[in-house]
Amino acid sequence: MDIRSECAHCSRPMRIRIDSDLNYHSDDEGCEPIVFVPDVDFSKLEDKCIIHAF
Image 1 (cartoon, rainbow, N blue to C red):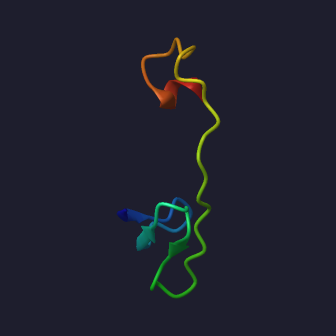
Image 2 (image 1 turned 180 degrees about the vertical axis):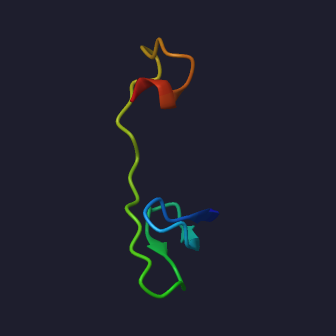
Image 3 (image 1 turned 30 degrees about the vertical axis):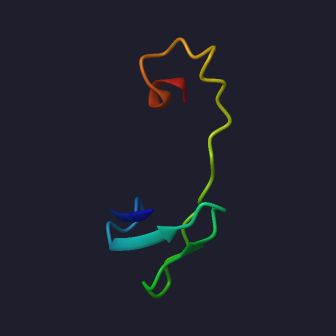
């Protein structure tokens, strides 16, 4: 996966590449993203979307 986003703290653009084993890499110096998979049981999710579950 190739993600183009920005830092929530300083708004600096960043590019993060994540493989299927959740290994990630960024060429942007000083970029230290936190990559995780939310622990959500989608079969029991009552919210409209995963964002609302948090």
